[in-house]
Image 1 (tube, rainbow, N blue to C red):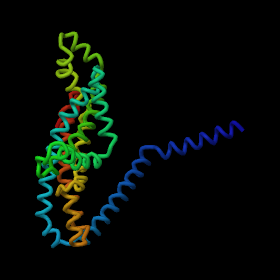
Image 2 (cartoon, helix red, strand yellow):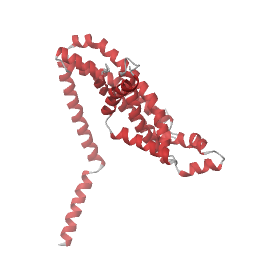
Image 3 (cartoon, rainbow, N blue to C red):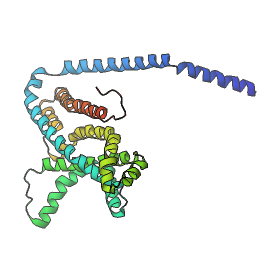
Image 4 (cartoon, rainbow, N blue to C red):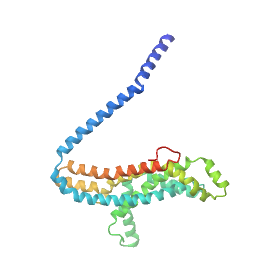
Length: 278
């Protein structure tokens, strides 16, 4: 009985090994990739065939205006979220309990609540509190500043966690060696630890910035005239969803693809250990 069970298990293992060899896996992978490419091609054919070229040309100017606005919001949110995230990451590894607790609470709140909720609180809540306590709200067009602030605060938490992880990946001996050379804790962190932590965290930070671009689609709920807002207006007026959808997809990809290439370039430049630096 034992020998029969052993022989059966060996046969099963042999079948699995034959299936999992490199040649079979390559064929399966190629077949899946081919089927996916074919499905995408068929979908694109029907979408393009369904689109209205005249409407496409007419709506391009308004979508380009929204595209420029999105670029500005992305630049503002990204430029502000990265230094904020660095400070949050440093706070997360701080040995001072108060600093660590504040940074941890910040991260838990902004990672634990939806960005949509945060945008609504900032856009509607802050003016309401101001009016109740101080009178008229001083900013007439609050939607765009609220969008930048919301993206900054939300993604600053994610960048902070990436920096914390990057610092944690630096060997402890690096800090000890820097302190033994007479550096203060701040000097060692600035000159030795943070450059290495930045390299470790760069991929996660880059991915977060791509997500930030896509998160701008939520700004339609606070009356920012971004790409999804323009899509909704065109669709409501023409009852043609596919033509503006194609334009929205193209414009988002015009941001995310170059951004992804830029992040990969930075990763290659920061590969101090060698590799292809072309």
